[in-house]
Length: 162
Image (tube, rainbow, N blue to C red; front, side, top):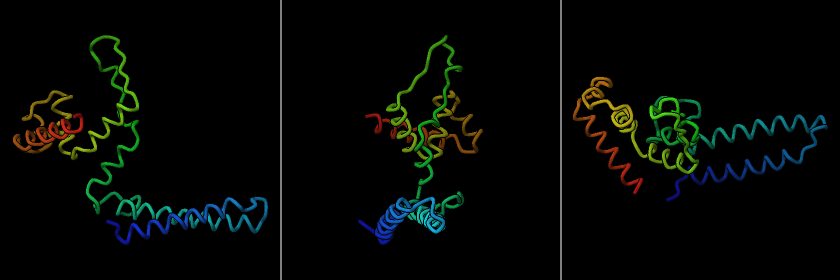
């Protein structure tokens, strides 16, 4: 179902493309065209800012509050380079750890499916080997709550992995 913001966003996209075409036709050596270029670039930048605001549901650059659930959680996984290289941490000798781009995408998709607390509790339990009681003490939750987060994370992972 399209809402008014989707229609407005579409209009902005068309307008931005028109401005970019106009900018590309300008002669960068002509004094008057340089002035126009500055103005057009400013308009394009303003449109991009407004478009990002409409797409995300919040003002770009502001990280307090939330208008759309989990919007930043999903955006933070857009770059697959966030997955650290843990080769030095492997205790089983000089084993090389390598993840293909496809594996990173799958892992990012799994992480994006988990809430912040589910991801936090699951990683502390599975990767760090902490007990549920220790995790509860560390992050200020009840042990049963931590257990529920871990169980939900496992179910979501099972669904994602198939």
